[in-house]
Amino acid sequence: MLNKNFYVNENGASIHCKIYYNDLKKLNSIVLYGHGFGGHKDNKAAERFAVKATSKHKNSGVVTFNLPCHGDDVRKTLILSDCNDYIKLVLEHIKTKLGVKNIYGYATSFGGYLYLKYIAENGNPFKKLVLRCPAINMYGVINSSIMSDSDRKLLAHNKPVSVGFDKKIKINSQFLKDLKNSDINKYDYSDYCDDILIMHGTKDEIVPIEASAEFAENNFLEFAAVENADHRFTDPLIMDNTIRDILNFLNL
Image (tube, rainbow, N blue to C red; front, side, top):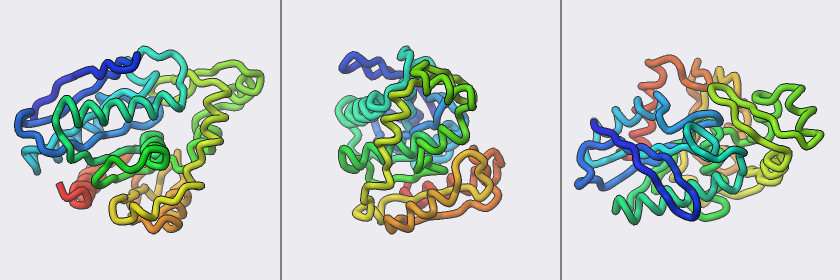
């Protein structure tokens, strides 16, 4: 497997991306990987998935990209609409510049929320989509699991704060308002019931599994509870078994 970095420079954005592949000239399908809050395009979970995907199907590739303000992205303050723009621009690049029409999706946590939000607002660009531990109620997650009491007090006074895990992401009160107004539970995803799989660890300490299970049930989506998996699926055996199931669902 090979990999290389590339950039999507459109509409004033410079999106840092990476592609994993065997032969660029023979690519016929790509999985677009969406990372979580505070993550980045070079994360090990994406690389582990790419190794398995490209070894199983030689003509498939995996593309990762930095969300706004994540990794080495130059944006300073996270704006929810910018995330939608980044996803749209990377999708267009895959179709027009890489010449690949068969696009699949795989996203985790905040990335899963963003993909569902994108689908509600733009239609489904993915032939199949897997969401691992998606932050269905991202507004609730960021309030309960990511921000501190002092962060909330500062935001209440319209002061920006930097929050997150591996990397701190700068947000403001408008970002929280946009999250609250962009509740994906109000949308109907049942038209995509054959094309979306949600997988969630039973020991997720960041995003409650109950929210994913209820969302899947309400929208008739396939749901799999992964026993003993935490939010990041840090157990290598559990992760490898999960990747196998993901590739089977994607039919890759």
